[in-house]
Length: 171
Image (cartoon, rainbow, N blue to C red; front, side):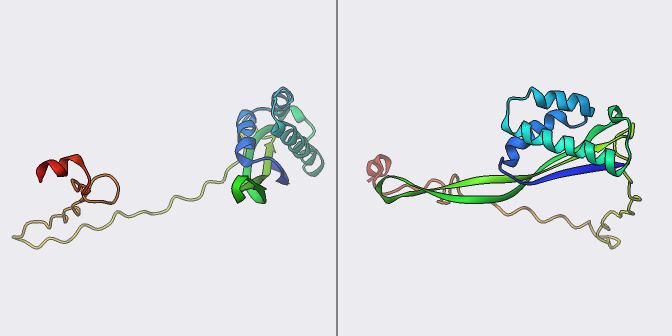
């Protein structure tokens, strides 16, 4: 049984939290807590709290007695809303600052092979039907791809402006 804990609107960016979550995903809970204790990142303190909460949820809600069997089977950091601020700069300019937040979710399970995942029944897939061919005719060929014109950017290839040295040589 997967037991989850979630911390929402955490003041750490999801990208920075994912760096820490990648280190503990799939590990036993004891090893994950030891890893977080020695990880020198601010996100590690927050993730450690969420992991301890997930363990407590498993103990209370699902009566898991042997905490050594728990493994981190789900560790996700989704982006939350950004707090927007404006920092004044020189000559009347303004730089926008985004204080990013995230939603951290950690799931633990005591099953030996991780989370029991119910696999949906395989869907019947069909290949697209081939175009019909009339006897005596050749099969229809695919239309050629449209020809691309121009080189870099949006201008024509080989076009020169009036002020270049090469255009003056031609004159």
